Length: 200
Image (cartoon, rainbow, N blue to C red; front, side, top):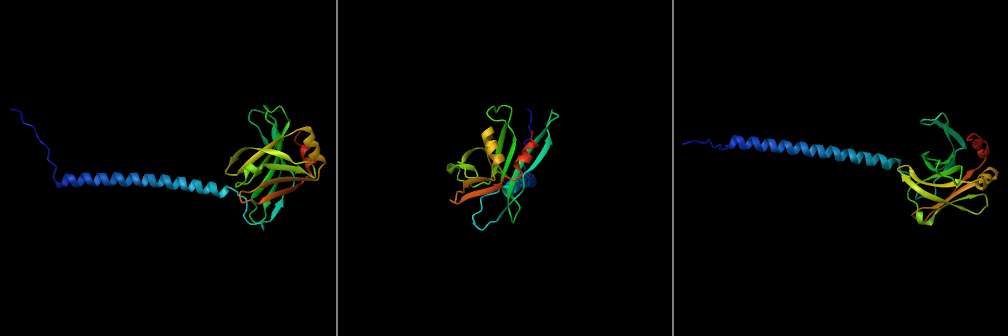
């Protein structure tokens, strides 16, 4: 008759199995904790860069001058140039609103240039975003995307709008915060024409 050996765990084996199970559990918890800590840190860093509409009406703003910045393009000898002006929060020097004029994408056949406006988060988008040159009739901007840096809206710069920008004295960006506060951010158009010539 064949005999079979039957393993009967003693207290030493049971203790060893419990120790291994506890160590595996601790390693898993530590791994999950590190992952959560990393996600929390990344979210915190993103929130630090996210500019919102200020609740206080005492916030002071300052404007930069129109300036042109050019960068090389991939697979092209031509430079990609952008004409822009920014409105900064005086205390923090963070960009609150910026307007950038640049060549329109190849697929955009309606206008040779595009005006892109960067705005803070916390807008009442249903109220719309407008731009106005001097006392002309306000135009409407179309919101097309957002990122941790802000909300982005744009409008095609057709010849009539370009002529108004060159002849005008002041550009206003008008929008409303979710708290009901209305913002009218004014930019001088001095230097716009000279800067635009560098885009050609």
